[in-house]
Image (cartoon, rainbow, N blue to C red; front, side, top):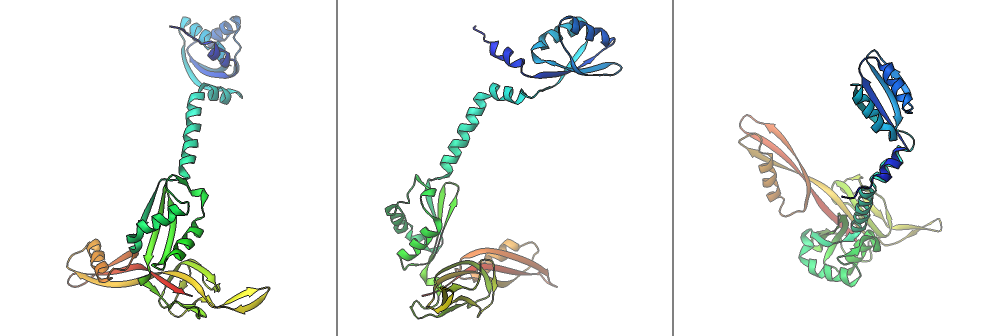
Length: 310
């Protein structure tokens, strides 16, 4: 078998190895190492042990001498300014693999492998898929080739079937949430001068195509609050405009469920969802209150409300 250790021995001259030697008469060991041309560094002596560093190329000699003199030798560590370089060279195969893995991961993280549809508008997923492919958004395409917000706007404008569209990158999938227009509020005309909330809730998204947003994402609003004003600032002057906008709200609704036993939160949620009559549920919370007989569950369901105008 062919051996090639030359490279490894040459690398050993680039760094140091530190050892702990245990035994008696350790001065004899130090003298023996010096006679054999082995230099020791950073020597720390104790009663029955000594710790020192040597150039790594001398390690075989040190082990041989310690064995001959019956000393117990323990390697502490490797060190030296060039030792990180040595580790890098010795692990060049592993390094190449890591670099290749990171490169592939970065490449595939930008690749759209498939579409995933949600929302009650997913019945039109085939139609939307055809639209996406026709506009250059297709499986095995790159996420960096299109803008998510622009894609949402174009999908919403491409069909009057939808009142809300959201696009999100999830791993290597493009997740598209479609909400049918039946769930929207407001009258679609060009004479709306302001958009108001008709429910209490928190703002989930705001898209204003004409007008000025009066709320931001995360704001809490009440029924009657102004969402989008019918004006625009043009050259530092306020100009009246009709409103064209879509605002989505996260709306809490509390349902009371009475059950005989404790710990039936999941069942209470199921009963509340049935009572919600098909609303798109985003999240929920449950409060359990003991009664004289049974338990009262206050289930808060958070649904999406879409308010449009324009």
